[in-house]
Length: 299
Length: 273
Ligand SMILES: Nc1ncnc2c1ncn2[C@@H]1O[C@H](COP(=O)(O)OP(=O)(O)OP(=O)(O)O)[C@@H](O)[C@H]1O
Ligand SMILES: [Mg+2]
Image (tube, rainbow over all chains, first blue to last red; front, side, top):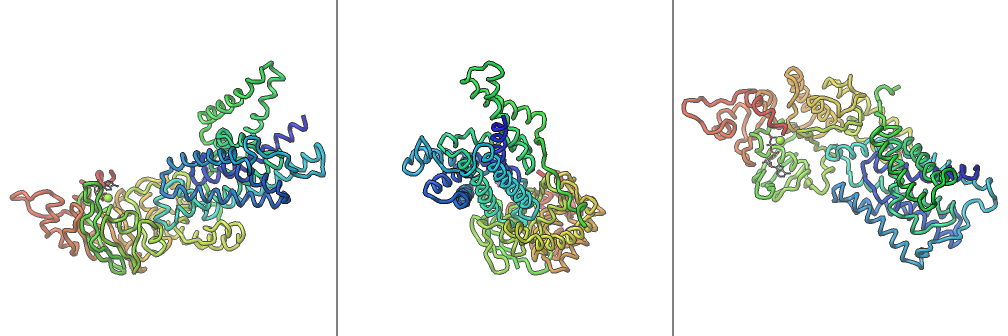
């Protein structure tokens, strides 16, 4: 049971980072990135490939973040002249492209088998001690990511992102290059998602193309929408809820007698129902975006 | 300061702006009048780089205005407001004002994270400036309210105030007084005059002839995309082409006069469409 709780918490922290990243893109900036898992995957594979090549994990993690930032930058450039809806579709296509590359370039990615046998984090430790150390690391990185996102949301950078989300013409009229803003926020979001992906690989000591299915993007979106678009704390709360639920449902079959092939569909069904219920009952999310009262906060 | 050379813009078969040339001097206040659909907003979009002309060229302060970089004129000191401001519902009035300022430290993600001191100092200075400008348009009391929750007239005032956050050299205003009540409208004319004394040239699209006559040094009248008059505001009512454009063909026995306010009243609903 302790092991399971630690596992859920570690996964929540990892997906929390991915959710904070998506929240910065979609919640703050209004960029409907349906290919978030591609940025996650670039980080995950980069870390797998580099640690396999003998790089120590902190260096591999940094390199994975850089690679995913570059991926975000590319996605941002890709959509320069596309309307928001078409850009959203393009991100979905890019994510599938990344997955297909992972699936087919055996020499680099191990093909359908993926890359396993990664040394991972804290090889000197064992059992719960190792899980605890991993959790501490993941939680610290989640905190750093969340504080970064919050800070970026409250300065002029974030104001321009929010203005871009709500009225891009006004942002342009006030002298803000919204294409440059978009590229910057996708690169930053990419680095964060790459960090999440890299941690994922290191924790599970494995990454494969099945981890990059579009459903994973949907899961991260669920976390952000459930928690509250535009609020950093919301993304973290959403990640914890969805991850717990997603990991917890297979346990139902121990309580209620369920055939194990049903649990997979039950997971998807449960997540879908929760999104629907949340959208109907609390469309702003559990922790809605707050208006920033700058005047009242002045010294 | 700002000039257009033989600028034309077509939408499919419709020519919204037709071979327009104009020149706006420093500290000038120029009115832009014309019936609904005569191409005033389109001309403003062209002048500000929001639309690319089909042919012709726009220059501001020596550099060509390009729609590929629509944000650039604003940074160089050419700013515009919108006929329909559509301000954000989830940003406060004060936030919209700050977004209109030039805060290089806060606008950079790196400096936001690494130099909080510089970000704070910069923000404090612009907060003061923002509150001052908001007071001029009676919005200081609403500083922490959602900008999108303001009334239509208040949104226009906020759009104007936000544009002033960077002390533009030329300001293009699309119907700044539409939906603004008469007493505030009079104070707005004074406010705009003070802005001019501060060194800003103004181009004002307006249907309210009284407002135009009161404020402008010069008027351009558009009809079907073409400039049909370029004269002092009080000369407009003597220009038969202008009167016909506004009132239709002259009927025998009806005296020619553009009545101050009269046209504005008749058109204010259409102007919002
Ligand atoms: N993006 C566009 N696509 C197609 N037609 C357009 C577009 N923008 C403007 N037009 C057309 O160009 C003409 C001029 O429009 P414009 O908005 O410039 O008029 P206006 O003088 O500002 O009118 P109003 O006083 O009602 O604001 C109109 O016939 C309009 O339908
Ligand atoms: Mg117009």
